[in-house]
Length: 164
Image (cartoon, rainbow, N blue to C red):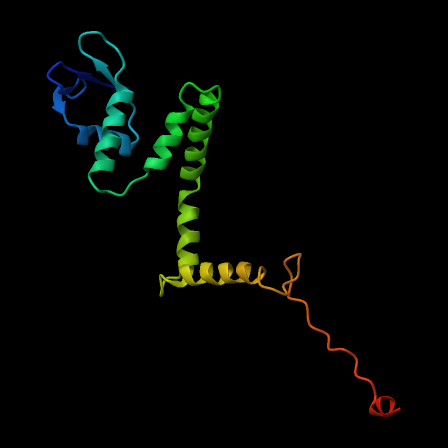
């Protein structure tokens, strides 16, 4: 495991390479899957989470798109101190791990859904599905969500009967 030391001047020192590193270098360690730990140079406390949170914060601020919307952050904050906090942490870890395991398959499915020639194909499919759902709520629609009831015209009496 690579050990990085954080000094009081806020600089990070890579003990295996004997050089200072930046947050961008640490981000590259994460992306390459290399194991590392950030330790405070004076106390020896583990600061890895703090550094990772700092990298995430910079990514969110740099306009790279956001993963952690205000709503998601608020919901996460609500779990702190809650009896379900431990479960939520495990759930998030397992969900992200499952997503990463299936990432290539998900990408392929999204490409198929979106259509290579026309990226609006997916939106059209969603619009069609939404219209089908909304049509179930139109007057005369079948209550179980099937096709609308057909209006059966009243039976016509034969003309001879009406004359009598």
